[in-house]
Length: 187
Image 1 (cartoon, rainbow, N blue to C red):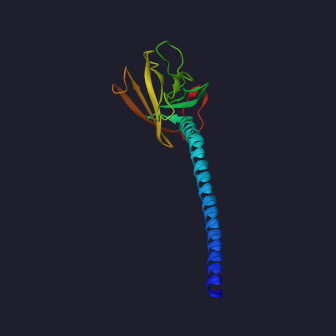
Image 2: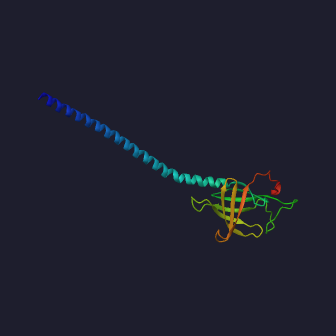
Image 3: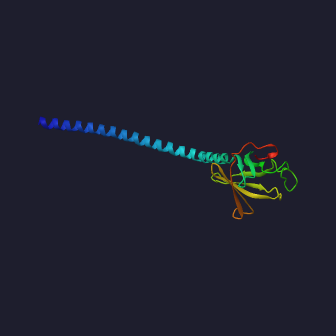
């Protein structure tokens, strides 16, 4: 009879020990689960907060890529694109011409430093193109236009009437020439 009692006491003790281990295991599992939930929540919050910021940073970076000096496809003009308030604009700052006679627009005024690109801005945060206007100095007409940069040293300008489908795209490259002289004369 003693053996039976000891065996029963041993079994009961063993059950208690196993129950204790199960509790420890459950506590550890609960802590792990809680930690996983916390980490997942943290990552989701980071994504929710950072994703819109990264789009804005991307948009700003895209606009920053457009700033600076750009030469036209025929290498007869240099434009300086800069910030003008909340948009981008561009002035004709370099011209290729002979002698001292600065090219003039339809109104007889010098084309040197004329603002030809105006009000370029994004229509949406995820847009890669900026929309604005371009002036044709020979006629004085203003056309709708889009600007974008597919590469660090390449700028695309598309002027159009009504919709971009009815337009023409010019590819400009970053100006790397010498200093531009007085009266916007290119070297």
